[in-house]
Length: 158
Image 1 (cartoon, one colour):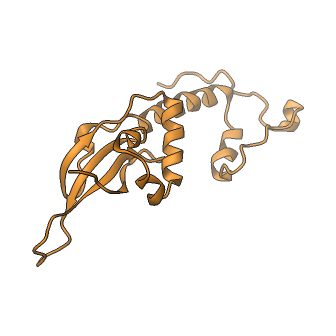
Image 2 (cartoon, one colour; image 1 turned 90 degrees about the vertical axis):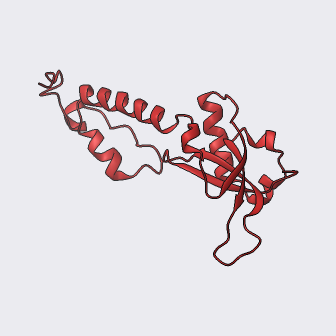
């Protein structure tokens, strides 16, 4: 049975409260913030709790079983242990970084962004030179919480 709503019957419109609603964050879709404005304090607190759990889930470290990529993985380096703030900043930086910029970084520097994998990849049927590579990839959790990888150039010395 749901808990009783302590705010039932509370004023819901700005006119009833005698104050303006706070301005939603810039860029936040109206379909997200508009229904929130109609919620009670009790329900908003539950939404906050859920959002914090959801963020923690989407930012969880990539497990070894999730790092398997396409092709044969020849070598793997785990990510550095960073705080949540550092992880978020590194993820934003990585998503905006070009392949050319990533090619400038060493494998050790790349571990800031996620698991570093050295892969050898097949190109298709009938190729006598397969697999090709080795190539460096960063395996990380994107802003939606999905495990993905990003090409970081040809691998050195493998």
